[in-house]
Amino acid sequence: MTRHSLAREFSRSQISKDPFANEVAPLREEFKRFQQGAFADWRLIVDGMVARPASFSQVELKSFPRRSHITMIQCEEGWSYVAEWTGVPLSHVLELVGALPQVRYVVYRSIQPDWWESIDMADAPHPQTLLTYEMNGGELPVGFGGPLRMRVSRQLGYKSVKYLNRLTLTDNLKPFGKGLGGANSDGGYAWYAGL
Ligand SMILES: Nc1nc2c(c(=O)[nH]1)N[C@H]1C(S)=C(S)[C@@H](COP(=O)(O)O)O[C@H]1N2
Ligand SMILES: [Mo]
Image (tube, rainbow, N blue to C red; front, top):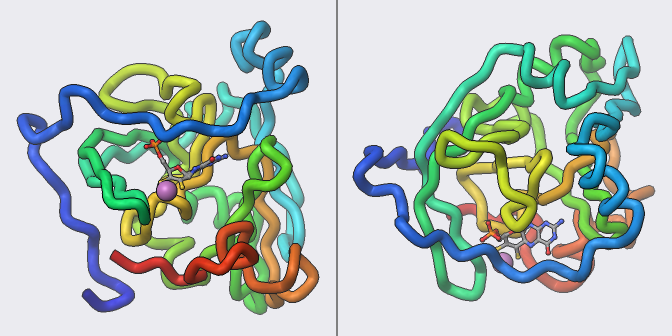
């Protein structure tokens, strides 16, 4: 697979009947407060090397162009499932905020403090990279990362970070964590986790 190709897409009949939500660390009070308010106050902050730093509510994100794809999510531990994911292409948000030409990476973070990852400018503007708010035609369940999840279709499941609340555009990964570009690479996994 080249860096510009599409991840395989499946037909609706191939959607897994019982998708398996991988266990996450217990969500804290801060998350539960958002959940009690039906995520009306949840915002996605976009900062770093952008002309127009911004933050977007769920309502705003849902008003942007949407795209869906039926793809497989695969954990490095071996299991996988197929689901339909719907959201805003990350490319749209990169245009809205005015990504500067020097940008090389998008660092993305979860409300879970130790969950963050990054992708480069092959995967960030890729048409299958979605800020996902729906799964299989309904609201994205909390177990699967609702209200907002980064879906990176050509890489292993750990790049699809749940509870997404911040994007930072940068030309350098060194200042983040141990400088290896993600919580998983800091922990010894590959930064580019291509399928
Ligand atoms: N915030 C957050 N995102 C996360 C994780 C997590 O623990 N916390 N687990 C990752 C891992 S290792 C995998 S394989 C997938 C699992 O996705 P699933 O629960 O939809 O199966 O989510 C990824 N995103
Ligand atoms: Mo995983």
